View 1 (cartoon, rainbow, N blue to C red):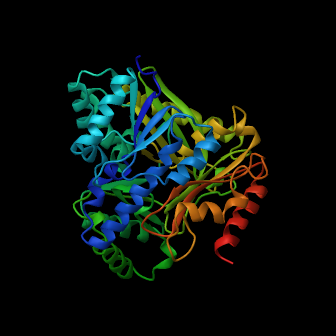
View 2: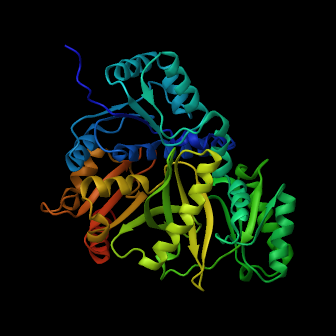
View 3: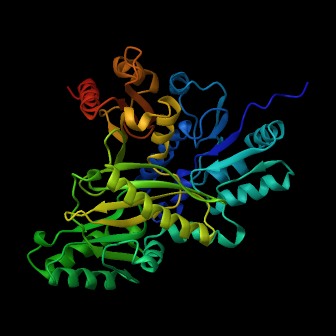
Length: 448
């Protein structure tokens, strides 16, 4: 008897692969291993992408205890997690090199014709992987893949320089911070000094920085002279290889208005052959150094006027990306100024840190989730000095795990890091106060 079609999707959680060109610049081996492990750990968020009936390929297997717990929460029945035998920066290459895994995937696609292959990011290596599958004459699709003539759009639109160039074509529709694309560190320093001379704060951005890495804030009031400012920038450039042989963007610093969308709203868009479609909007949470922490979705997060304007801007940008031939996910990061003006800051041409949160919301909470729930995520919560297993973490947090007393509230663990004592999580609550109370209970478990 022919096997029943159990799976609809194969997800490739190739997060580190998406940032390979940045990661390989790190000369310090210990630091490179640390950052690589962090990127690989975040791949566990893929468990929640695209619902049930899927295979998820991660750099290493997700803890069985965490899989069992989250399958129960999400009400999944047909989920399988696979991983290559040898770890690599590139997940796609590791899959192609692992003959046992490769043959397993060939069998799965053969038994489930018409499956969709869906990555975190459409990279050069992922496209190579797709070509290898095509040679096997199997029936599958890749909906998030640009046409051959438009694969350049992935890196171009993911770059700070490419985004800036495109937005300048829409000056009557989209506002961006005043800024410059610099061809060298020397040029960047001179432009920072120009901002300083005009008593303006600014931001220095690496062309392919991510999650706060490759970001330097220059507050004008923190420097007593142009010379001190230059010495500080040179020191920061010299201690991080992300600035080597890289285009650098210098732009004005926009002081945010935290009362509107938290100051930093974001909108995710999926672009198909039919055009752009907005999936969700959120508030982004950042640390003191601009590092990405997590997102807030749902109840009273954005008022209707701001949300409508963000969606209008996002659709204009999405339509342009569609015209260029881009396909797949991207998000747009915005800042709302003190004068309530909206500025577009950048796009990330891939799934992002809020995708799994949105998928959790619609999978677990139903179609009215945005009106009924307040949802808070964090990808890097340090719980102590010693790494604990997923089993111990689940037991320790049992009283605050979703669902608390059979109610739709509580903590969902999304990531258990193997390299540092940290977890990623999503908190589901009915109000922001309830979410903060649950977060306080989480803090008290580990930081009494």
